[in-house]
Image: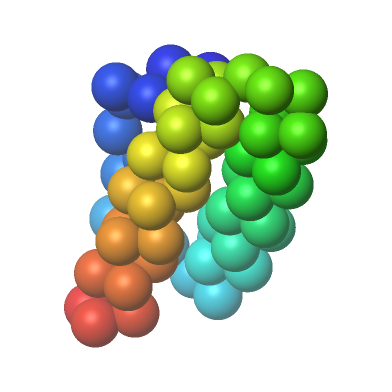
Length: 64
């Protein structure tokens, strides 16, 4: 997964889409933890960056 790409969903996001985004965020957190356990600190950081961007997008979606 490319940490530089945006995680911005299309307009008109519904509750189901937001739930799917939250599942993706949870999985990214799990992948970051796994990477950390494997001493891949760079990979863990990239997963955390993507997860943080997705969290920010989820918050913006909730505010709309």
